[in-house]
Image (cartoon, rainbow, N blue to C red; front, side, top):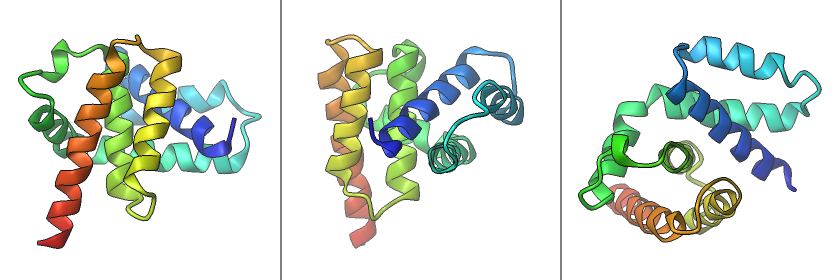
Length: 140
């Protein structure tokens, strides 16, 4: 597994922990990394960057996901799916030089590992729509 894929998986896990637990962002970050002291620094740095963007811009990211999720509210989505999409949208925002299809494909590969097969089309559709919306916003 590549370092970026590993970072993306770790980001999903941190966002999931934040979503499910009763901890704030810094508590999640501290407890998460305290259990992974031997992690490669480049893997940790990229995961931390995506996590930071996802948490700092959470309201904007959640709004974008709901806008493109055709009558789905975030609280009705599976926790893995919503946090995977949050991480991908954070990467769209924070790393605009990474091609959107790469981010979407990575999200789908991670979904194959952590989510249900039925979720793949939903995640793909939402992320594709969000990426097109962001690309259109850049042009205007």
